[in-house]
Image (cartoon, rainbow, N blue to C red):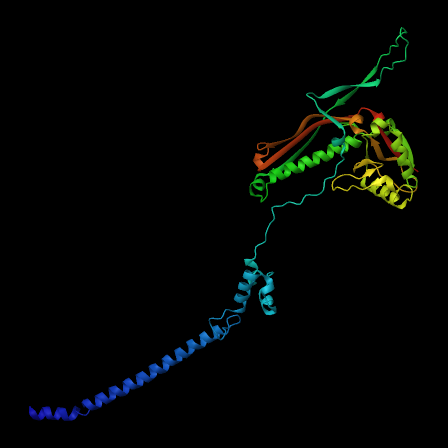
Length: 386
């Protein structure tokens, strides 16, 4: 048995030598570590390359000092703190308010709550004429056309008798109305008080409409204007080119009875005022007939009487033959010459129902008023003809 065991050990001993086995294992481990290290270095290198490529993309370049803000951040911060004057040329190019992604998103527009309204011009006759309120659709005003004249008598002589003569002026009222449809959402979301703004606008438009009717209305569904029938007044004729205008204005002034002239006023277009003013300045003998007001808001005077602008009146056509005669100037006591009657003031009603299916609110406004010349002798007009 011993011989057999020795033989077997002799035949396999070289392969099972412990020293050789350990040496082989060490060699295999060394080769495996070298292979693994090589593979890990390759992966690490590839990862670093990818990071470097990502960092080197346009717009991702870092400054030498990572704590230093980039030019875009610095420009935006300076703009928000100190305004555009704080930016240098490079920063201005970088911060572009016109480009949303370069800073435009951070700048919001500002909307004003002030609404700019256009000028509304109207004739001043309401402030000069007589006005009264009535409780029905029309009124009759008695007018004394002739008074009673007495006479000188002796102690026991017969006293003369005379009866006054009367007429009456019938003044009807007329309605002026308007409807403004406005969406409910617009009224809810408007940055201004839209309802109040529209009411003010309606009031101004109504005032303009009635003022125009008071001057030139034809009486057909509207008041009868002061100058609707200029033939009812005493007339002074002047040339359209204005060559004799100053002289005719003086004639016009003295054509009105003194009782009316003492409280009289002039009305004309602004362009006619300019013509008279230039003629007065150019004249050496009649320069004093025009006088500017010292106090702001007080009208200028012509021959000592105030001048009021009436944009609805005629103007001077100029040289040549006009299509028709014009009446560019009127002078008189308008409280005696013209009567205004008010039935219903401007009333604005909000209608939330008739347009509700379409999301509409209707603002309904109306006004009832009338007017008519009642005493033509209290005014005189200038007739301009070729």
